[in-house]
Amino acid sequence: MAQRAVRDKAIPIRLACEAFRVSESCYRYQAKNNAENEIIANWLIRLTDNNRSWGFGLCYLYLRNMKNFTWNHKRIYRIYKELELNLRIKPRKRLVRDKPETLTVPLAMNQVWSMDFMHDQLEDGRSIRLFNVIDDFNREALGIEVDFSLPSERVVRSLDQIIAWRGKPCVIRADNGPELVSSRLMEWAAKHQIHIQHIQPGKPQQNAYVERFNRTVRYEWLSQHYWQSIDEVQMFATQWMYKYNHQRLNMALGGITPKERLLMAA
Image 1 (cartoon, rainbow, N blue to C red):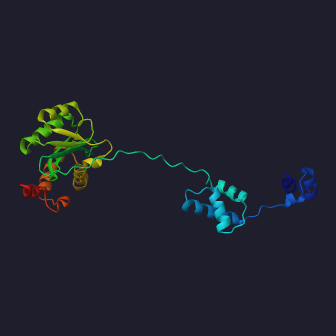
Image 2 (cartoon, helix red, strand yellow; image 1 turned 135 degrees about the horizontal axis):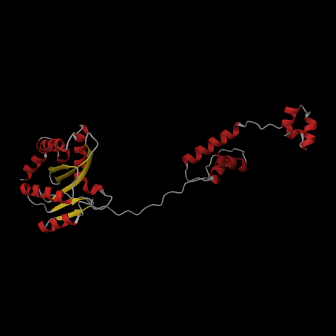
């Protein structure tokens, strides 16, 4: 107020100080642009970044005892709070996770199959689904069913078609999707004496063989084209499946095709 009176009313500094009861030294005081505050801030940021468990006490002792700075604790703490270094985020509580079951490695064909769903869309934006089935022994693609909807009844029908030419598996591994845990599929499996092995929820690595197959499907052809119809996708999937089984070398099998792996085991 004294400075405003001097500036706007042209009142002498002595009279302004007397009127507002402040000393002339207080009136004339100007805060120094102290570069040391920036040095302190840089040190505090550096210390807390490199030592995330350090609080103010350790930072202060390090600056005083290790670096021999003479700044007092009140000054350092004021800058420490301005930087909001005192607002520490508590670490997340560690969760106890179940150890996932190991992925079984079949020793012969038709011991374990794997099945899973994929999603994509046509050029006009309509969503489509793919139902994939492979034999874990030689990674052979046994079937790719494509449609807008694939309920449990379609899953059963697709499996019956594969069994008609391939033979019956002992175990089919699947995730916990609604079509794969349905009572219809369970009744079908019990009728054919096939065990449906559901993986643990949230553990897709337990169905790694078909998940890797899905990735191959996605990147080799499904995401490479704009599809106009279900029939177009189904026809391409059937042609690609033959190429995958007979011509495409599989590095997981040692650089041979799934059919060659099957012949070697015969």
